[in-house]
Length: 150
Image (cartoon, rainbow, N blue to C red; front, side, top):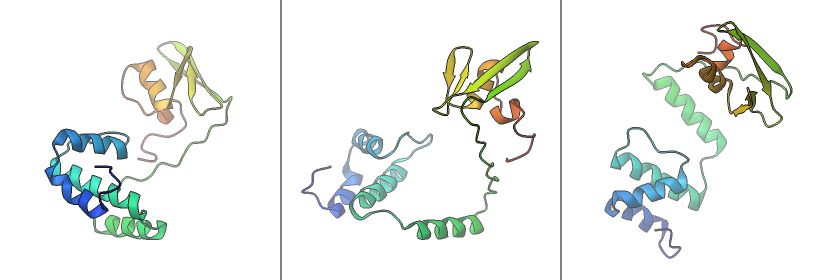
């Protein structure tokens, strides 16, 4: 499929004839994770786009922004407000009392979070580890109020 001898059109045209196993192989080349509820048509269309994007380039940033605006304006799905990013400088220590115990988290130079000798990629992962339930990390550590940014 990745044979340079095949034209882009031939690669796209061959997608419906490929076994699903081969479609997944292609998917894994173009995307970091698999969709939760895929169907063959969805896989083929997304892979076809990526094949064309690799050959001809992607959308111009302005075109992408315009399409997103049009989609948001005409969508029946309510969009969530985007949470303002929280930027914590390396060395910042966050402390939260939970279960009659103080829990200290340190922001690393790599942007990770050290807690009790373990490294976590997000504050939410730390909050989940501490509480055993799903929590917003910024909310748990008092960096955001309930309902803010959601």
